[in-house]
Amino acid sequence: MKITEDQIASFSYTDFHVSSLDLLRERFSKQNIDFEHVIHKIQAFQIAIPSAALGNGRASNKRSRTGGGPRNLNEKLEDIGLLQQLTCKTNSVSVYIPWDLPEDYMEVKDLAKELNLDFDTMNSTSSQDKNQKEYAKLGSLGNPNKTIREEAIAHNEDVINIGEKLGSKGLTVWMADGSNFPGQSNFRSSLNWTEESLREIYEFMPSDWGMMLEYKPYEPNCYHTVVPDWGTSSMLAKRLGSRAKVLVDLGNHLPKTNIEQIVATLMYQNLLAGFHFNDSKYGDDDLNPSSIKPYQLFLIFCELISGDQDEAQAWDNISWMIDASYNTQDPLVDLIQALESIAIAYAKALLVDRKKLHECQQNGEGSLAQEILQMAYLTDVRPLVCEARVMAGGAAEPLEAYRILMIRNKLVHERGRKSYNSIF
Image (cartoon, rainbow, N blue to C red; front, side, top):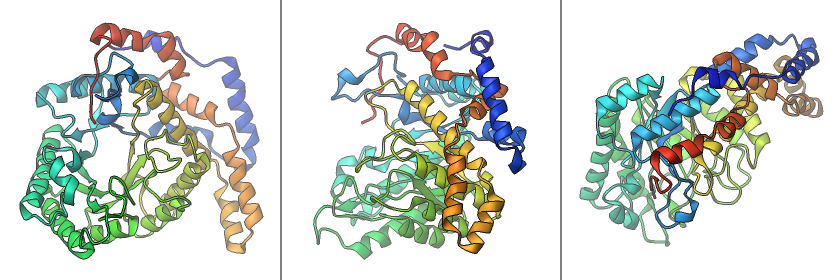
């Protein structure tokens, strides 16, 4: 289904929105902030949607299904097209293989073009391909068995070939390799085999492609993970070459980790590849971005903006993608909320008085620096985000539009109440 322009236009902003925007202009007038420039920056910031996020149908949990779920990649593209119409915040899809193998490449590409969507970085999920039972024992790219490693390498090469056909320009690699008991694996050998495997994949990539190396401290293995942190990931990236960089998944860190410092350190080395936006309460990494640690997300964006302005690493060289799993809620509702939360955190960071903050940093004035950050963080920037969205052609209130237009009901009518896409 598609939403008409008239339907979108019917959800325009109110007089209250206009007055709220004027109040923001007045409040920040002394900082000489160009609000039109800020709104343009918010409007230009686009976040890719993972194909894996559109299905919420676990085979073991039928009660969680909302109905009307996409049954294949084409229908997932249609759902992302709906998100783009409502939010104007996502213009691309990140495809997960083997979960979302295209059936007809030309049909998929034509549909994406019709929906004004591009194909972002491809994701190779080695732990979920046909050899997952073997990988669960001793890993994939770091497996002691050369035959298993070669099969895992071939899987990544297949993903690259698929990505070339779709028009993608990058590969995200995450491995579930590790061990559950002391002595089960040789740490150095596993790391060496992983590096050798990654090098083969890196050399197989087209010359205009980039490789993003993800890391995770634990899960599914609870004793050791081959690539457990940003340091190991950045070491591998440096050894592979300039087209390999580090992907930061916000949920994949141990408690109390200073993620914004990691971001700054990676930018300092021009090693930041991109982000998987999500959040974490305990050991999970599938919660909505900013749902648990909104201030942390704001501080991360502060570092990203600062690094771009200081020419440590260009903003345009960083990839952005949501990486959360919605197995109990309507995925489209949660994705709209996620896109809004990310945009709000970014907008707040744009309002920081960087000149004053720099002066405080030079003089070590911690309390005043904190006040500067708090002034931006505690500001209700929803009028700015709304203005950017409406100017781009989206709905003033996407969730309101989604519910009033009864989009989920229409999807259920088109696809059936039992329609779902099981990925786990």
